[in-house]
Length: 54
Image 1 (cartoon, rainbow, N blue to C red):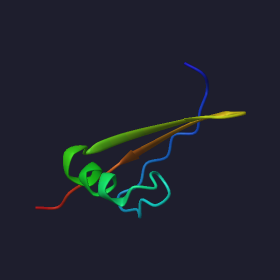
Image 2 (cartoon, one colour):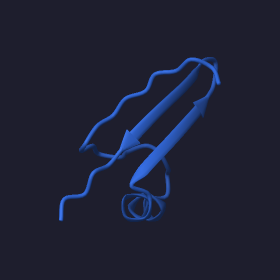
Image 3 (cartoon, rainbow, N blue to C red):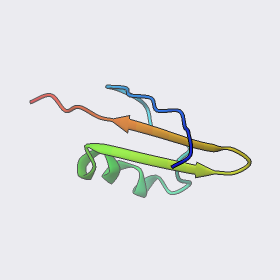
Image 4 (tube, rainbow, N blue to C red):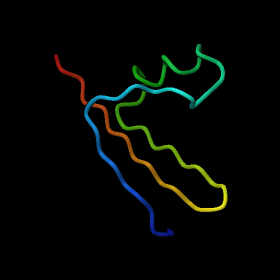
């Protein structure tokens, strides 16, 4: 695996991941840990971990 930038956050606003908003909302409910990988000129591995409070 190539070196990357791993960032952990507890709250964030997910924008720009998809141009279809109906695909953004299910990510919060179905994936407690969401890993987004972008491949362009450089590799960026961004790990977002969402913690839900009861």
